[in-house]
Amino acid sequence: MTRFVDTVHDKLEFKFKKNASYDLDNESIYNNLKKVSGSFFYQKEMTNIFITAMAIGFLRNNPIAIKSPSNSIPTAVFTKQEKWMMIAVYMATKRAKVDALYEPDDILKTSEEFANGGIKYVDLIYKGGSFDDPLEQLEHEFRALLI
Image (tube, rainbow, N blue to C red; front, top):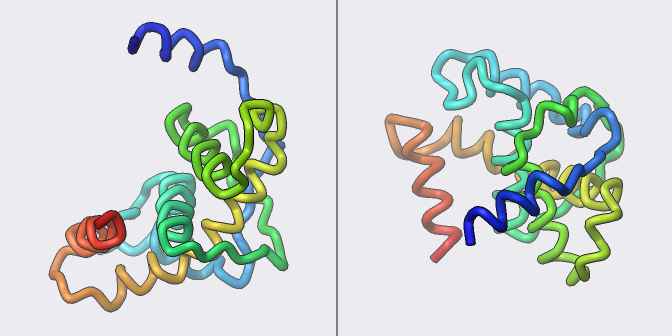
């Protein structure tokens, strides 16, 4: 089964536009999460922050349209797994059929909206958690949302 999935996975060449966006109103949050040494995203790719924010935005059912797009996250950097997470979020929220795989712009837009809706939660977890370790706080938040 895994071999079949890997084969299908490798054959699907998914073409997003060149850059994904976060809302410029949230730029300082993204920059702080990436540059502050105490952050669980310290020196990681922006895609890590984006996907985490998207997941939390999805779990909290909080998509927010982007008003001022940054166009600054190269989509070529997204891993195959991250792309499949974006597809899964789109399929779950739009009740889409398989032919939706041919709508990469819609998939990316949906992912951006959920990331936009989740980034402030990520920031709150980082700043106001009751745990000493922000990563432990993030794990706790995900577990609470999944139950």
